[in-house]
Image (cartoon, rainbow, N blue to C red; front, side):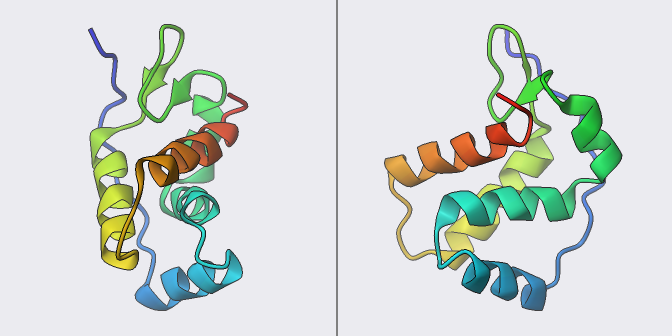
Length: 101
């Protein structure tokens, strides 16, 4: 049984801010997604989830809220013409690193 955090209110990230992040991270999906996460989630929640949450959940962590995962995936699909399996793995690694995992 997958344990998932409840949906949260996401902070708005403007198109201009997303474009700035994209340029800042040289169009690399992993670092871009991690910064999107940091911009959309209030920092007290990120701190609370540290070492207790991961993108998809594990035996010892709970999965991030579905609405957050869905929004990041939607932005990635809108931003990049092609996202490979390796890109998604890299995205998970970069976001999980925010939690010390």
